[in-house]
Length: 133
Image 1 (cartoon, rainbow, N blue to C red):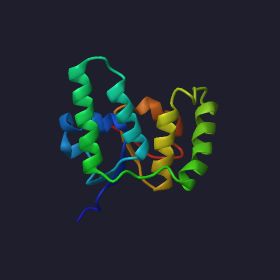
Image 2: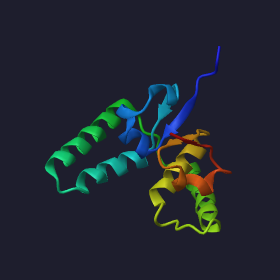
Image 3: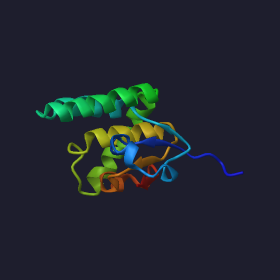
Image 4: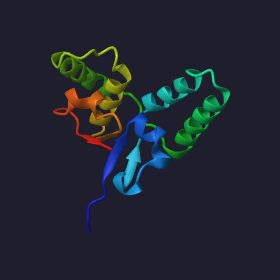
């Protein structure tokens, strides 16, 4: 019997969760509290009432589906490595701030990241496993 796959889902996977092939997703998944923050901000990032309602629904669904993993002391320690790897790759650590926090949460919990935006995590591949969807 195959071992169950476990992973942390990036916000891009949570947003597109209902249109992704379920066979590509891990058996067990988690999200970061930072992902919930991104989803909460997304509701306020549009002026379109219908889109705002759709984003709010996604936030509520995600909060009800997963107990978000916190950004804790171990994640904070690992954030320094994520920051350094991003800078070493010549990328802006500020532009990818939330991604670095999510990657740090994944690494602190020994989980790979499933993402729809693999370039956002490319510089971190030697620190955390990145699985592109």
